[in-house]
Structure formats: structure tokens, C-alpha cells
Amino acid sequence: MSVKQPVLPILALAFLAACGPSAEEQQAARDEGIRFARADSTAQAEVLYDPAGFDTITWASPDSALSRGTTVFLYSCRRCHGSTGLGDGDLAQEHGIVMPDVTAAGWQFAGDLEGIRHRVFVGHESEMPNWGLHGLPYRDVDAVARYILTRLRGE
Ligand code: HEC
Image (cartoon, rainbow, N blue to C red; front, side):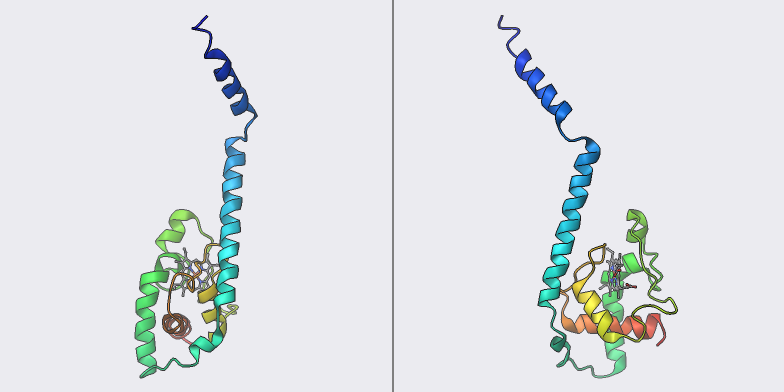
């Protein structure tokens, strides 16, 4: 009799497991959770973004902005965007992240310093980090936006 006792709970567990969500359903729920969290972070960054934050930034020379922008890009952006901005960075390739080519003719932010600063700060709910929430200062956002326009696009 005592041997049979565990059978019922085990059967109950097996029944629950059979009725629970499949591995695919669990993965889909996790993906949905990540999407939701990313959309939420992007919305938070949007609330924090203040274009006036750039008004007081001064650079000793255009070169000093670009030199800082190079450092920021190589450190924080290159692994996804690739060293020339084509979107072929090793991290992006490893994770199959679909990347834009920021050097493309007719790029949506061509000549648009404001637009680039905004996108860098706020990010995007795909895989573009919300840099404003990660503490990237406005000065670095400005520097890297200038770097993209001047050095990567030659504008
Ligand atoms: C984890 C990968 C990753 C990193 C790191 C990353 N990005 Fe992105 N970035 C993306 C993805 C994915 C997109 C496309 C999302 C979108 O539509 O904006 C994107 C979009 C952009 C865009 C808009 C391009 C367009 O055509 O829509 C800019 C500008 C940009 N990133 C700049 C940067 C800068 C500057 C850094 C570093 C401070 C950086 N990114 C770091 C993944 C990344």
C-alpha cells in the first residue's frame, strides 16, 4: 500500500505537464515579454528625451567632436553597426539581428543630426538599445551622431 502512495501525485503532475503550455508556447510567451519590456523602455526613454539638452554643448573644434564620436562608436555601436556602418557587426551577425545600413543613399536620417540624436537616445523596440536609459550623456550622443554623418556618410 505504501508503495502505491506516490503514484497519484506523479500522475497528477504528468497530467498537468501534458496540459501545460508547449515549449513553443513558452518561448512565444517569453518573446512577447521581451518585446513588451523593450517597447516599455523605448517609451520611458522618449519621456526622458529633451532636445534642449544639446543646446549647451560646445566643442573646441569639429575634430574634437569627431574624435569623441569615434571612441563612442567603436566602443558602443560597432559590434552591431559594423566599423563602417553597414550593419555587419559581429554581435548582430551572431544573433541574426536585422540591421540598417546607415551609409545607404537615401537613408532616412541623411543630413538629420536631430533625428539621429533622438534615435540614439530613445532607441528602438527592435534591438537598438535605449542609450539614454543606459546613461550615455547628451554630449556623447551628439558626438556619435556627428561621427555617423561626417565620418561614416561623408556628409
Ligand atoms: C545590439 C545592437 C545594436 C547596438 C549595440 C547599437 N545599435 Fe543602433 N540599431 C540597431 C538596430 C537593430 C537598429 C534598427 C532599428 C531601427 O529601425 O532604428 C538600429 C538603428 C540605429 C539607428 C537608426 C538607423 C535607421 O536606419 O533606422 C541609428 C542612428 C543607430 N542605430 C545608431 C546607433 C549608435 C550611435 C549606437 C551606439 C551608441 C548604436 N546604434 C548601437 C542595433 C544596435
